[in-house]
Length: 405
Image (tube, rainbow, N blue to C red; front, side, top):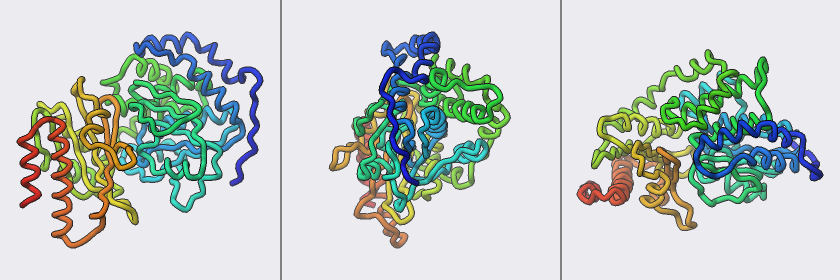
């Protein structure tokens, strides 16, 4: 499709941005609830100005390769806001949606996601918007850069990654990106009763916030304000259906492997689950969530080798923690380091993190004995780095000894 001609308006404040003034009291309450001391009250107005300047364009809202409810719902909110400025948006990702709740979310709410393949042309977009990520967890980042598609906005709640520069940036210490977008909606595109599109959006955002805060058990004041606003528009029956979807047998197998293979040291539970099918990749964070429920465990780390069909193998892992003094972003970066370009293999936010490490030269499928040895090699290397970071030298020696067997 051809890109619409850009029609910029630079004189004065757009009508949509002017609505922010009317939402001032709500925004102030949210900021006070955040307790960060940093003002985000002007962010909706700033976003409105940026979108007004790009009126009539076509944008790609970029999700991580394996989208989660927070990202999906936030992207849906951004798409609605952008439509107020006649901006057409595709919600794009390059991986797969495999988590049972994510599939239910998309199907029950009829959310239109676009899986962007290698053959798809990206120059059709006048801009990109990174939602719930900063480009480190999407295979589209480098492709969009190569296509010279400018980054219009980044809205995220993870630690600052310093990978991309955008016209608009809102990266804050929040529980969920969906919470941020609930604030934007109040200022720029208030939800209306009886509007089926708004009901779908409110339901999706509610699920996004619930999933990031463990059913609101770890919610902050801003999350309660956001859910309080959304609650009046939510389709509770659909939300219940999303939350009640059963796990797949393959996901249960990965969780079972994580439980059987876990090693515990100093309240850390670390488990390598071996080879995981690409379509079951989301079972890895589910397994980490499960291990964290064990008595006397404050941090759980689960990882495995995942191979995307026709592409390189990756070691993919997830970290979950209840330890207040453990910063997942710093922990993963310090433990696993960065590649030759200086890009860290992983990162995170409060209470959660993830990492992806290319397998490299040993990638590929060979005979059973070779595959067994390959896994032992990478398993031992990941454990050695994790135990070293934790300071468990005895376990490091055990990991090295296992490779020699």
